[in-house]
Structures are given as structure tokens and as C-alpha cells.
Image (cartoon, rainbow, N blue to C red; front, side, top):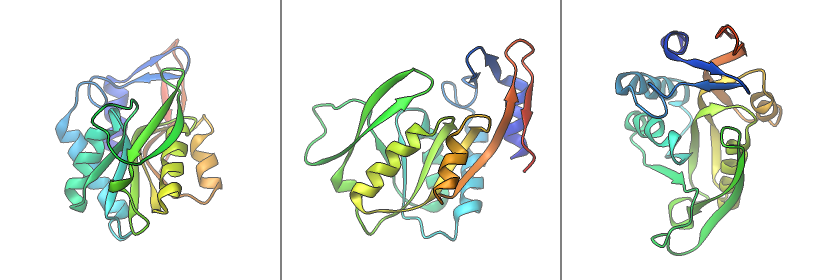
Length: 193
């Protein structure tokens, strides 16, 4: 998605440790117009997949998933990183390792919101090692839900997550794939799509 690539080039910030900060428009401060365009693009890519739910992990994926859900006219369900007292009933649980934070989370999703008759689109802001998607795929497998695919805003193509998921036969549609980035120069190279 050219618009997203251009925004990453303009406002993204490459940091040591393969970190790409896009917090001025995607995952801290939100550019709603851009997110709406992202939602429309995910709809264009998956409109014929029979999706009846969008699933993500809190927190960065929620806004993106919500704007995509607007086009699909379906609910968003998000896995929570912390078990709170207002989560009741049976839960699906999986362990997710966060590349950005360098720690493991137990993510949970209420069984009342995900079922075997659901066809879901998994959405997230980044795909690096693919651990968040692994956790969501595990939760969907526990529920017996069908996964139509993964919608990713930014994939780090030089990290193994995307190739590993595609190698498992999972459809992954990334709107911008960063092939390389250099913290010293701030230079980013994108994969032609």
C-alpha cells in the first residue's frame, strides 16, 4: 500500500535492535484517515473470504481492526494481555512473546465470543517473528474457528514471521513489507508488491 509506505518513510523512525517506530500515526497517536484507508484495503483483499469476525491482540491492533470491521460489518474481538476481574466464564489462553517488549504474555479471549462456526481475519500492526499471530492462531484452533488469513500493516520481511506463516499455508497480506532498515542512516527499503 503506497500510502502506508510513504508515511513510514516520512514519519517512521528506525532504532537499534530492528525497531521501527511509527507511533506518530499508527500505534500511539492515530491517523484515523490513514487507518480508515488501511481498513478499506484489508476489506478489498479479504471481502470474498466469508469473514464474520476480526480478531486481534490489545492494544495496538484494536484501532486498526475496528476500522477494518467497519467495512466488513462484523465485530472485533481482541485477546487481552492481562486477566482482569471483569473477564468471566471460560477462556481461551495462549502465550505470546512480544518482540517489542521482549517478554511473554498470557493472552486470553472469552469463549463466548469465538466459536467453531466463525471465519476470522487476524489483524495486527506489525509482523516480525510472528509470535502474536501464533498466539491468535492457537486461540482460533482451540475454538475450532476458521482463519481466513492475517492482515498486517507492516511486516519486517527480514525477520522470519511472515515466511514461516506462509510456509504453514496461512494467507498473510501485509500492506507494507520492510526488506531492510538501517538505524545508523534511518534508511528503509520496501519489497515491491
